[in-house]
Amino acid sequence: MYKIATAFLTRFFKPSTIYKHGFNWSPMYRRTTARLIEVSDDLHKVVISLNLNWKNKNYAGSIFGGSMLAATDPIFMIQLIQILGDDYVVWDKAVEARYRKPAKKRIFGEFIFSEEEINQIKIDVANNSEIDIIKTMSLVDEKQNRIATFKKTLYIANKQYYKVKLKQQRANS
Image (cartoon, rainbow, N blue to C red):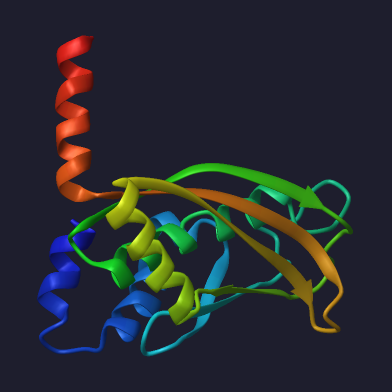
C-alpha cells in the first residue's frame, strides 16, 4: 500500500515531502509518538523528535525505551529503500539498543547516509550480491546529551539475486 501511494504521489510532490508526511501520517509510525521534523531533498538525512507525553511516559516518568526503539526502527531501512531504488532489497536484520539516561524532555535523532556510503553499498552489492551493514545513531536531548544509542544491522541485496535465493530456500524447505 505504501509503495503504491508513494509511486502515485511522486507525480505531485518531492520524495522528501512524501517521506516526511507519509511517516508522520502513517498509523504505524504515529504510534511511536515521534515525528520526522526534517528530511533532506536527497533523503540522505532524516531528523526525528520525540516528546515526553502521556502516551510514552513510563512508570519512572521518562520516555519509555520501547517508544525510543520504535521511533528509530524503520528509518534507516526505508531511507535506503528510497535512496537505492527498485534494484535492491533492504531489510532490518538486528538492533542493539543501549539506554544511557532517562529522557524527561524532547529528544532528537539524526539518520545520515553520505554519498560515499551509498556508493560503497552499491559497489559491495555488485561484488557480493548481498551484504550486511551496521549503522549507529543516537537520540540526544536539546543539550546534545546522549540518551540512547541504537546499532542497526541492515541486509542489502541485489533484487534478482534475492529472488533466486528465496526460490531456492522455498524449494529446500
